[in-house]
Length: 83
Image (cartoon, rainbow, N blue to C red; front, side, top):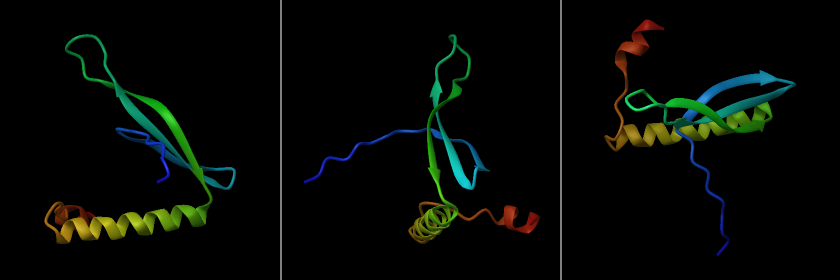
């Protein structure tokens, strides 16, 4: 069995398009002084061509649909009405 490297991120800080590539800047939350909210800090960047981005988006949408069907996520109907 092949060992794969795992990377953790609390979220995506920014997604932008530059140099013909889509760039995802992932962040982790870093603790601040006692009592203050954690601060997002850039930890890693993933760069992919537009076609790879579209493929990843389609895969994520399929997973979202499955999670909604399983009852683990709920659609935000109010957000749909705002569009």
